[in-house]
Image (spheres, helix red, strand yellow):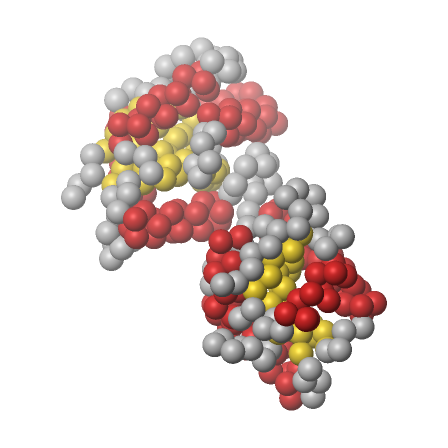
Length: 314
């Protein structure tokens, strides 16, 4: 059995996975690092991958031995870099090999650095600090790239990644997934008459309200573009998703943002389209999106400020 050893249950310290088939090496590293980092340990590549898939959201760095039984460090790194969930976790090789050829092979596979055995702890600490600092900067840049600059909620790129991921997961587990698309009613008239500055403030307010209504872990609200927003609801059927959509509609009109140029209300309102299905892995997620978009069109045609749903066409 492998050890999945957590030294600290708090989230304030960076988390490192140590992978080495020699217990003495793990002991040395744990003794040196346990005061500063949360640690997980594994003794071969297979065990390391199991831990990474389970804890990929919290592990910040992997120290990976090259020469191990069952699966060596090179193969483990290759699988890490091929996984969407794991590919951005930095890996530093631990090795007794220090030839240029071995180092080049590891770097070509995606290793960030090398630590040689026997350990020089000053070097170990320095290289860990360097990699964690780089990852912190990288994570911040990635986060900013996935947020809408105006509303600060997830952007279209973020949504595209999420819907693909949740679609595949729902197909694997044979579970429902729902989508809500919503559009601010008569927003062009709002911008034309109140100005784009107030229009931007309204977009921010709607985005904030939307995020506050989508509270369940795993649900995902994003700005789709312009005055259009989208909500991904995993493990949610059409009836439940329609209730969420109605809750969103009511919350936004209750913001009481004045809109004297709307034809349906004195306040800002939204129209919403809802779709739901249990995915077939052979079909693209765009089917669900097209159904939600069609339902949104129906809501607008029916008078706006309402929810329209599309039954699964299958």
